[in-house]
Length: 131
Image (cartoon, rainbow, N blue to C red; front, side, top):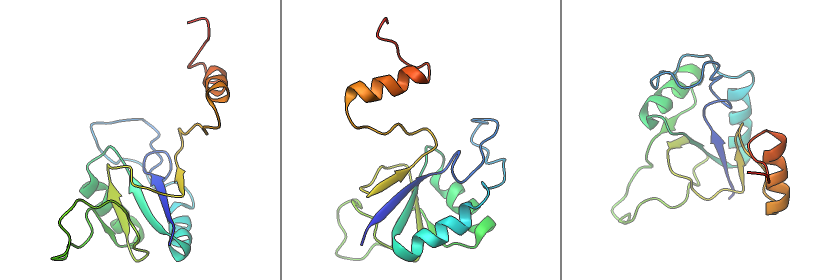
């Protein structure tokens, strides 16, 4: 079983005005829920966010009908914090970065090596060797 991590703002929630006191104010991105359903057929999927996880989970479920939780069901054998997500029947919403085979994020920079990474940051105006 593989797991895919998906960022919330700018990937699922349009986030057109940036942070607004935590309010989830925009509609979903075009194709977001259809894509999540498709991913869930093949992978476990979790949503990572700096927002209140319960608010995000409730918003996703209300807008899409996709079951969402903030913590997986805990059985008597579970004594340590969750380390992996492998449930394809619902989305986990968390502020933790769990292991995944891919992370989908609108602000991601692919890391191959530091030279390429700093070059990519330079292209975005976020780095200069002169600094």
